[in-house]
Length: 270
Image 1 (cartoon, rainbow, N blue to C red):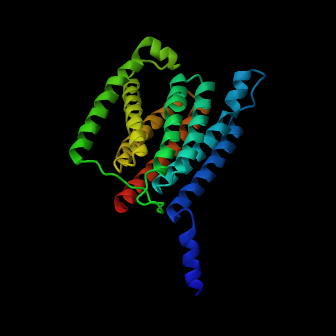
Image 2: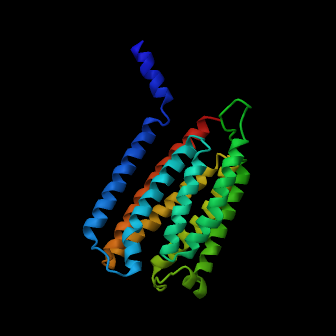
Image 3: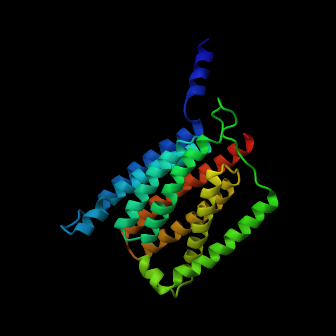
C-alpha cells in the first residue's frame, strides 16, 4: 500500500528525475556564477554604464533559468513552455539593449516574443481529443527534412557574409578583428545558429518532431561559439567577458542535453 502511494506521488510530480537533476545543477551553477562574478569583479564607479554592466549578470541568471524551464516544458509537450519562453526572450532583449547588441534586441523582441505568444495558442488548439492534454506531434518526410536542412545550411552560410558588411558590423557593435581565421568561423556559426533557430521555432509552433534535430545542431554550434569566446576572454585578460562566456556555455550545455532528451521523448511518444 505504501509503495503504491509512493508510485502515485512520483507519477504526479511535474518533472522526471533527469529534469530535476538539470534544474538542480542549473540553480547551483547560477549561484556559483553570481558568487564568483561579484568576488572577482570590483564595484562600479558612478558611471551609469558600469553600474548597468555590474548588475546585468543577475538579469542573465533570471533569463537562463526561465529559458531552462522553457526547454524542459517543451520536451514535456506543455504549452506553458511558451510562457517561460516569452519571459526569457524579454530578458534577453533587455540584455541586448543595455549591451548595445541591437540584433539581439530585434531577434528576441520582434521575432521570438510574438511567436512564443502565437505558439501558446496554437498548441492549445492542437490536441488529439477534446478532453486530452496530449499534443498531436507531426513527423516530416525524410526527403523534405533533408531538403529543408540543406536550404537552412546554405542560407546560414550566405547570411554570415551579411554580418561582415561594415554598417551591419557597426549596428551589431562588432569590433572583432577580421584578419583572423577564428573570426570567420564565428561569423559562419552565428549565421547558421540564426537560421537554424528561426526555422526550429516555426517547427515548434507546428509541433514537428524534427524541430529537435535543428535545435541539436544549433546548440552544437553555440557550444563551439561560446568555447571560442571563453578563449578570447582569457587571451585578452578580460575576466568579466570570460565569466559571462563560461556561464553562457554552461546554459547551452543544458539546452543541448535537453534537446537530446526531447528528441528521444518526442520520437517515442507520438
